[in-house]
Length: 232
Ligand code: IPE
Ligand code: IPE
Ligand code: MG
Image: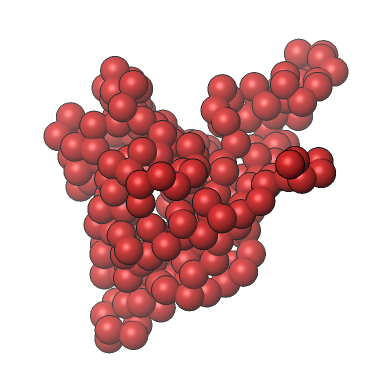
């Protein structure tokens, strides 16, 4: 993994927890549990390799219409991984930022998330982990437009970006989606205008460090032209 051009910002669409669980004759909730474990493992590996920003799609706005039992299981996972100060998420030692509309979440979960953001701010020099929870790109864009309207302002690309959840961050260089589907499912639609996309047929809980490295090597071989002509 040395001497390759690494993406500064990698985003994951962590899909396939339910199908992975089904394949192993286990309930969907078990798939989510193994999915969160794998998320910690892979985020840790990405930061160790030198990636500066990792963004993970944990729950979409559309996912909130899943059965309440499944959502409750996911909220319980947040509760156990974000324990005050000493959860697995905090152990990563990076700054944690949450992107999404937290208002429909259970009060205590919302409190834990806000607390984690505050407490990990000091870790900013080590890296940034964005957790997208009840995140939807359309909601994000509409909210930004409404802010601009409320301020009575016209926007340009820079000022519009500052109204998104990702304000102040570079766009993702690479989005990796597991689970075999080839779509963005309402993820970072504005920010991904020039992002490289990588799709894996592995289900999220089985996506390994090796698979991540393979995706990063593949990324390093891409020719990013940003609409320009190839130099040299
Ligand atoms: C992704 O796995 C995690 C969430 C959306 C919360 P899924 O739960 O979508 O798993 P599949 O796609 O049904 O296998
Ligand atoms: C995308 O997965 C959302 C997350 C991984 C959090 P979904 O399972 O919700 O996407 P679709 O429904 O297959 O498009
Ligand atoms: Mg899915």
